[in-house]
Image 1: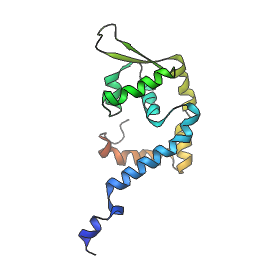
Image 2: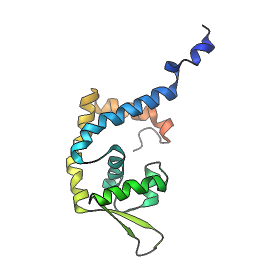
Image 3: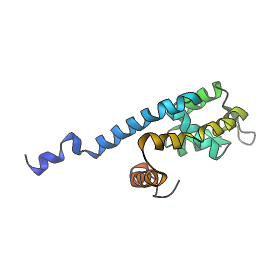
Image 4: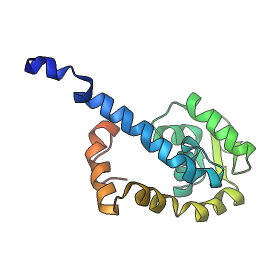
Length: 147
């Protein structure tokens, strides 16, 4: 087999390694997030809102690297669960503002242990996770060390 043939082996593909790792990481989060009543995509929405609330739908979608049409069903579901409110801005009715409810804000306390549980499950330290995250930064459209 030639070097060129090795380049086309599935196991040598960066895209396959990243997609497989992403699928496995999401599966790892499932049992950790289940007691919180959140799916992985919903957890990501909540993380953004725990950092700053209210946010517009467009801001939220941009932060999550989603288009608003993809973020909207996530937001609607979380509203149904009583974790956030969607309302038109008083200043500009074209803007849909997403705000945490008291229940949504309180859920943050329960979520504080999620990262520790994930690190324990995979046997990684904070430094290990930071190094991995920073190594993936070129693919995630973010600069290393920037959160």
